[in-house]
Amino acid sequence: MSDAIRHVTVTGRVQGVGYRAFVADEASARRLEGWVRNVRDGSVEALLAGPAEVVADMIVACRRGPSMARVDAVRDEDGNPDALKLRRAGERFSGQPTI
Image (cartoon, rainbow, N blue to C red; front, side, top):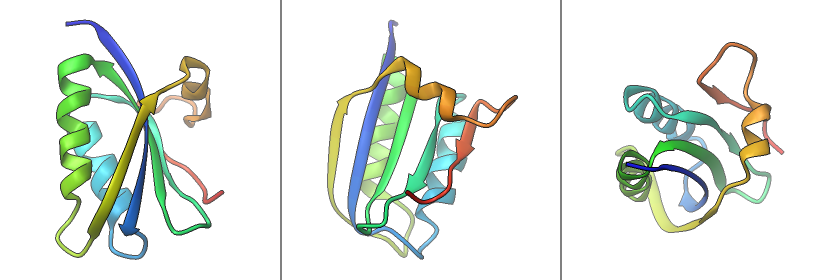
């Protein structure tokens, strides 16, 4: 398994429904590194880093989301390793402030 870093942007009804907490919990359970945050345009974005198969499985989970969410689309792009520096010190996966 090779390492992968993916930047995902999720649109739909994904704010105010526990979507960030869902991503953080799922990513932590998979021992992924990265972060998740709301974007003022109503989307949620996340950086997911870890074994390629695990990251791919996490993206499938992002397409599903928590029960209260409605995911319309997930844009999946190569992630920049430098973006991992946005995590809080000492955390593998962090929730970030809205941008």
